[in-house]
Image (cartoon, rainbow, N blue to C red):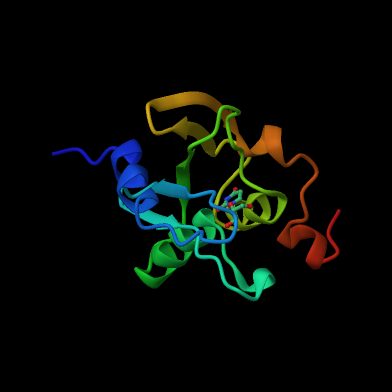
Length: 133
Ligand code: THU
């Protein structure tokens, strides 16, 4: 049975802990290996300690020993399609490429599609760290 990212994102969206924003988010990613991981946002009364759904999915991926993101779907119950926040774009870049597909969804299904390269041009990369041009 194929695992659909939208189904995984819907499942974890229900478990999101978002009592402060009341804005639940679910994310599901597929690795190049085909493995799928999901995460939801987990807010905290100390607001900056909250974590995004994408971060949860990435943490689950890394904990499972995987590390190459082919595509990631972000689901929110919003009239305007929700794109990953700036910090999450950088987190996705750590394990993706400019070609990594980013799918935007609401509970009814997919509402948009873009790439990491389109959302995070000119990103900071390991090449910068090494001082390479
Ligand atoms: N949020 C995510 O989980 N992912 C995003 O890409 C955008 C924002 C969460 C963080 C916070 O819990 C809530 O949405 C409102 O900002």
